[in-house]
Image 1 (tube, rainbow, N blue to C red):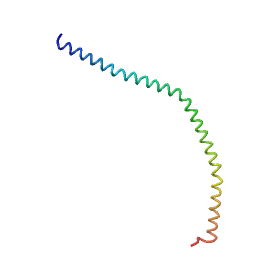
Image 2 (image 1 turned 135 degrees about the horizontal axis):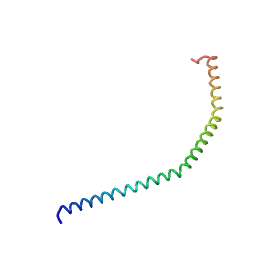
Image 3 (image 1 turned 120 degrees about the horizontal axis):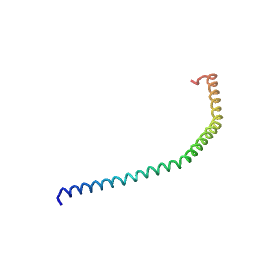
Image 4 (image 1 turned 120 degrees about the vertical axis):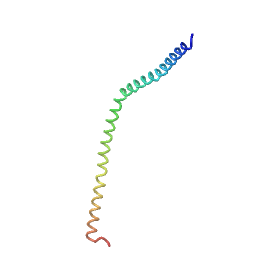
Length: 94
């Protein structure tokens, strides 16, 4: 057997090793992608429910905050009006 034969065998041997070493990460990546797709399909319904609950909490928080802030804003505007009237009646205080 000549050196050319062993050269050809080694090239084929290296090609097989390279193919196998490339194939393993490819198979792992394939199953990881399939697992992520399965997980997203299973959790999509849960995320939609959570988003609906979040919208409900946001709407109620907005309503309650408006109800709490309205008297404070009204009182502040009345006090500002009284202060303006007082400054116009008594002068700027300078």
